[in-house]
Amino acid sequence: MTPFVKSFIFYLAFLLTSLAILSCSDLGDEALAIENEGCTDPLACNYDESATLDDYSCAFEEDICGICGGDGVVADDCCDEGEFTDDCGVCGGNNSSCVNFTDEILPIFENNCTGCHGGAGGLHLDSYENVMSGGSNEGVVISGSSSESLLWQKVNSGEMPPTGNLSQNEIDLIFQWINEGAQNN
Image (cartoon, rainbow, N blue to C red; front, top):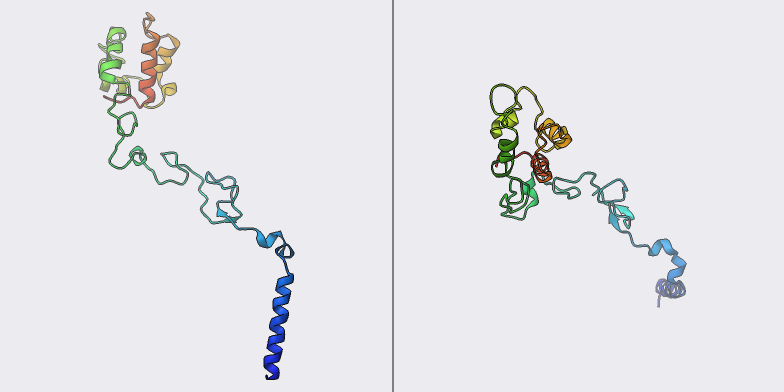
């Protein structure tokens, strides 16, 4: 056996003995920690508190579907494949869940409002187009915002109609119709 081979065997034996003596606890807890990749920014909507290594996936906004970092742009993006939203934003809906202008809102106006708001000059509440044009006042109906709509403010306060004949159900329907986007359906 050559001196080189003897040295190599001695070194190998020493190395194996050293490894056998060395335990996992000698390496410390740091060496045993498993890195967990994820978003480490607590301000992100997809923050992962168990992440120890940032994977640069942090997102800070939800899309229209409420998905953090999602790519939904329009309501139809939130539906299952082949489904579309109805006028009230219901995936696969048939408009039965939303207030209908022609069948529910217009009759309220015809029965309680068009005596004063259906003839010459000013605000006309006798058709969808006239309601939305607002007559001489802009902002009579702000689609999607009853609180900004002059019509709702007047109805909700009891100022209109002056006879005060609207039921709570009729008031609630006008509120819901405006907040659903004041659809012409």
